[in-house]
Image 1 (cartoon, rainbow, N blue to C red):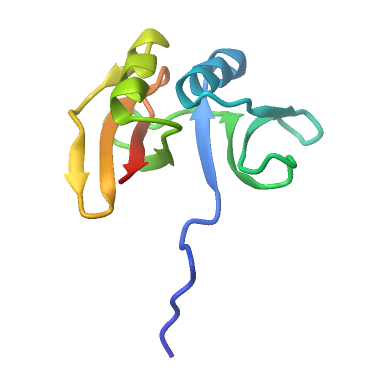
Image 2 (cartoon, rainbow, N blue to C red; image 1 turned 45 degrees about the vertical axis):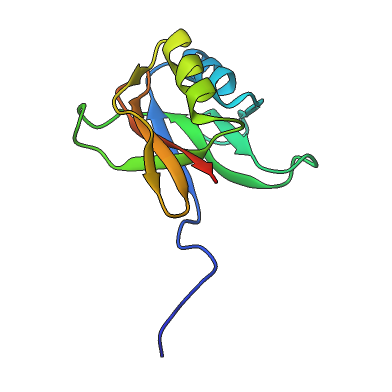
Length: 125
């Protein structure tokens, strides 16, 4: 039997050194509001995916990011065009690492966030 789920990605966790600073960065870049949750052993900031606040796709957490250029890359959907998202990344202090790269299902570009995490932003076309 061959397994073919709708999505192989279930959850993402992005380690950050400063929760407030990282939360602001991702909120500014993605034009969204992350939900802070301090009920567990560590605070986390959830990426909320539905207006009813029940869909969650991952979170930021206090942790040690991989050394720059060595960690996995997470790809996040953009709320508008890649060009507008690139502008917000730069304004928020992130580093844009590539131009827009077209592929059959859309376009994406790479950045390093404030902690050096590798992140791609994807625009469906």
